Image (cartoon, rainbow, N blue to C red; front, side, top):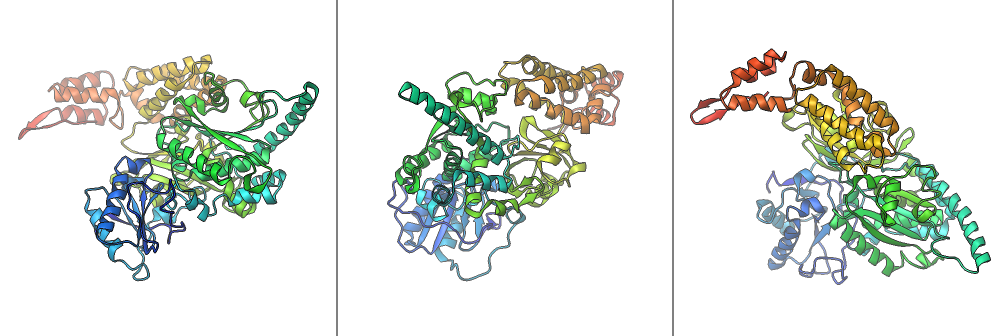
Length: 630
C-alpha cells in the first residue's frame, strides 16, 4: 500500500446502511449490481471538489474492477464531502479505517485500494492511527457527511433521518420545539449570530397575530385571498464569500438534513411553505437538493399530513444569479419575489413583514442543519458543547497557506492555534503564521499575537473581526496586508448594489486610496483619509455589506499599521507583493536595476529589501536568468 495514498480514518465503522441497488436514485446507473452480503465498503467522495478531479470515474472504475475480479461482497458507495479537500479525491474504507487520498483513475492508489478491498478481513489487524485533522473535530452538522449517499433517502433514514421531524410533529407542541431551540443556545450561523430561538419566537408570535387578522378579514370578505394567511421559512444558501464552501458542501453531502430542519422550523413558527435560495453557481448542490425534495415528498416527509399528523409543509428552490448582496436577508427576499435584489431599511424586520409582507423566518444552511440533532437529543445536550453564549459547533472552510485545507467542524471555543496547527497541520513550508482572515470580505484579519484566542462570536468581535458564515483564510509572511485589504475592498466594491451612497461611492474611494498606497503614490494624509473614510462607510451604509466592507482595512490598520507606513513613507512592500516591488524586479530583469535602486533611494525608499533588489539585478548564469524579488 502506498504511503502517499493512504490516510488514517476519522470515524470508525460506517453508520450508514447499504443502499438499495434497485432504488431509482440510490447509485450511478452504470455501476454493476452487488451481492446482498457486504463484507467491505468503499466510500468515494463525490462532492464538488473531488468530482472536479474525476472521483465519479474512480467510483465507476473501482466497481468495474472489483466486479471483473469476482469480488461481489464490496459496496462502492457515493458519499458527500469527507473533509480533507487537500488530499482529494478521497476514498474511505470504514471497516479497516483506511482513507486513501489522491485516488485518480490512473493512480497507483487505485491499485492499492482494489487490493485492500479484495483481500482485507475487517476483523483482523490494527486500525491506522487517526490524524489530528479528524480527531480534533466534533461533528454535529457534518455527522452524516462522508457516510451517507446524499441522493438516497433510505441511507438518510438509517442514520436517524426525519426522526426529529416525527418527534416534533407527533410528540411536541410548536412552543415546545421553540423552547428546545432556545435552551440549546443555537445562534444563527449566517454571520450575525442572533439567537435562533428568539428569532423563531418572534416569527411564531407574528404568525399567530397575522393569522388572526387574516382569518377575520376572510370571514368578513367571505374568503381568504392571495397569500394573506401564510408564514414562510426561507433557507439562505446564497454563500458568496471568497474561499467559503461550508453551505455548499452541506447541501451536496446531506440535503435531507436541511429539509428536515426547515420542516421542523415550519411546524414551530406556523409556516406551511419554505424556500431555499441557492446561487446558480452551485449546480451539484441544487441538483441534490431537488432530488431530496422529490424523495421527501414521495415518502411523506414533505407535503400534506407529515408523519401522519395534520401538519403540511412544502419547499421550493429559488436560484440566485450570484449577487453577493443577496446574502443580506431583505435583498434575498426581494430576489425571491422577482424584484431586484437590493436591501431595504429595517424595521420592519422580516420576522414581522418579510416575504410578500408576511412573517418570515430566515436562517442559513448550517443553522437549519443543526436543528434535527437538537430536537432528537434535546437542547441541553447541544448546549453542553461550546463556551459561554457561543454554544455548539461551527463549520469552517479552512483555506489558504495551511497544509490541510478542507471542511472542518469544531466546538465553539477552540483556539485559533488548534485549528491552524493541530487540525490544519501548520503553515506550508514551515513559514511563520501571519494572520487569519475570518468572516470573508466582511471580516477582519487576526494576527499571530492572538493565535490562542478562543473562536467565539464575542472574542472575534473584540479583535475586530466576525465569525461570519465560517470562511477562514490562513496567511503566512508572504502576504502583504495592504494587498489583502485591497483584494477584499475590490470584492465589496464590485458587489455593492449601489443603492446607498456611502457604500456605492465609499467603497470605490477606499479602493482608490488602497491603489495609491500599494503603488507607492500615497502620503500620510492618504493614510488618514483611508481610516476616516472607512469609519464613515461603516457607520452610514444601509446594509451589512457596506457596514462591514471596511473591516479588512480597519483590522489591518489596527494590527499591521507598520506595513502601511512602509508603503507610504519608505515606498516598500515588506512582503514583496505590491506593484512597485514588481517594477523593481522588472527593472532588474531589464538590466536597469541599479538605476531603479538609485531612483528608489532618491524617494526615500532605501530599505534593506530594496537595496537587495537593486543589487541583485538580472544576471545571466549558464543560460538561467536570476531575478531578485523583494
